[in-house]
Image (cartoon, rainbow, N blue to C red):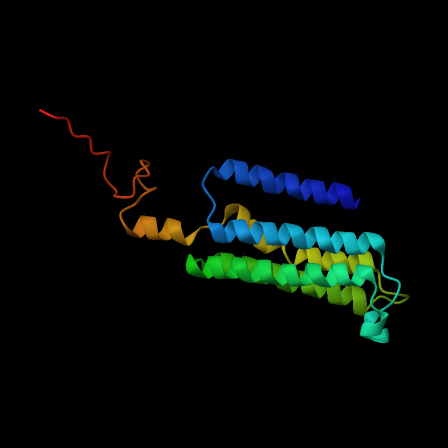
Length: 177
């Protein structure tokens, strides 16, 4: 199940990147790689399993899987903050909302499956909640605007006329006479 879910998400992400056919900014590349490392670390921690509840036993009850998962959470936070910075620099309030709603929904899923499970917490579903926090950020990385695009359009429509030279006019060719 997890493999199919992960591979399906990566396939959709790759198709979106290939359809877009525009260069990514360095900030979006950084966010993409940080979040990919985050999801890998979280899944590695979930595969090893959680045998202790660190909220009950404290830091002394942490295992290797907890360390991987907490490191993945740290990478998740860095990736989400990077995408928020990119969306704010591009002055794109809809993308800020998409990222924010994704974070809130994912956090709510993780809290509900941890706190309100009647027998014992299901760690796999808590991991799913943390993975859902990155959905909006991954969507921004795949299809969101860059600040460089906004600057180029303001400077004269680099992409508006299709020539991409940044001055808004056609290509200037001079011939010696």
